[in-house]
Image (cartoon, rainbow, N blue to C red; front, side):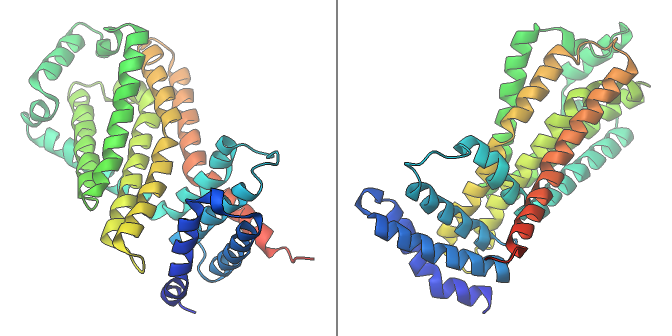
Length: 326
């Protein structure tokens, strides 16, 4: 059976299940059990016929909700927080790979255009970064401390301000996806241009190597998280543009929940990045190897989060499904 036909045949039933679950007080144990049986059967069929689709994610979430209600009075082996990181997030990330890739491409194109434009037009850097910031940076370079901007504020105040700002940017990149992904694309592209122009400013002053080793100490986590948040915004925008066999409103609701799960998972990234930028980046005198180690560890964290964990989860799940039942 084609996925569209499968959804059409069962959509009213699933929506009815969702409606029933909004009034769980009225559901008996037998009714919950019946819902669970129907959903597990549909989920098993969808996993076999349409793996790695939004339909599987949707049915898995609905089944998990019923399962939680049935066993709510029994002690759980893992709490909600652990289940989110161990099961829900990896599945959502794996099904969102192409949107994360699109986000990375848009951001990278912005960086390239920003760097090339700055290299060929002396006024472009001031247009993008502002005269005040450029003048301050040039003054710091003349004074022999190009990264003095990271030392002008106390660590605590800087940590609070940077972390809040990074979270704000990520939420904005996600929320702008409501404009059919165009808003998210703009945020990614404009931030990429700023990054490209910024690096070109230091390159023109013979400080590119120092910039890379200083900025990317915190930028590896910070910029990666912004790209992932942009991917979440594209997930939501795609759900509006291409609802498939679902009603547009229902598709948007699914896409928004899926994107929000990704964005919320980035909060620890921004906290750690804010801490590094506030307490570590300012120590420009630290040895090259220490800076390199921080960058490498940060990159490994991003790779594990966005690639290894989702694929590991998919592999384990496929192995479980391949084990014949008794």
